[in-house]
Image 1 (cartoon, one colour):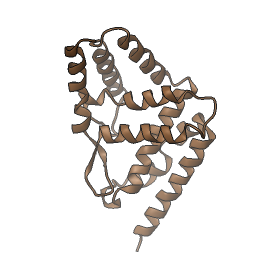
Image 2: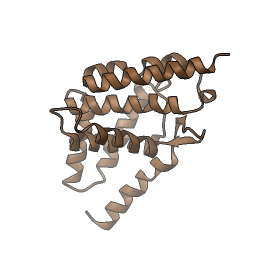
Image 3: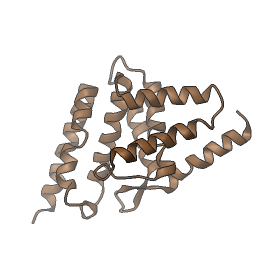
Image 4: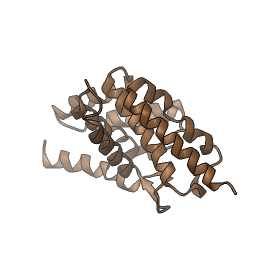
Length: 189
């Protein structure tokens, strides 16, 4: 990889630090896409010894790369994202990967294709972690930052992905829902 190829790719990826997500941090500050991706990766690292028969090196790579398209498109909240938005974002990811030399180009594209098909255990785990992190972040954020639809969404978001991934993720997902319910209940007069 030349210095130019390296820096060109990294400069685009830097947008993940600047592009904010719909959610906010516990301090009420908009969360960056990079912060979300970092914590999804950390969650995977924490579960490496908890989930058997999965390649966590691959899962962590998926977690790091999963929102790369948002460096170009920005974040679109899941409840607003259309199929057309997803197709465009995926096209941007593959276009960005085309700027890489071999072997990185093929490695990244193969990994991203596996992530999109969601057929492997690793892809299912990454996807469940991605959704779980969003729920956890909402639970940490001030409830005043929640939209009305999020009171229900935070209790259902990512449930199917956790069920498909692993019993450990399902257990964590159920615990996150209990946190959501406690947060909502604490808000009531």
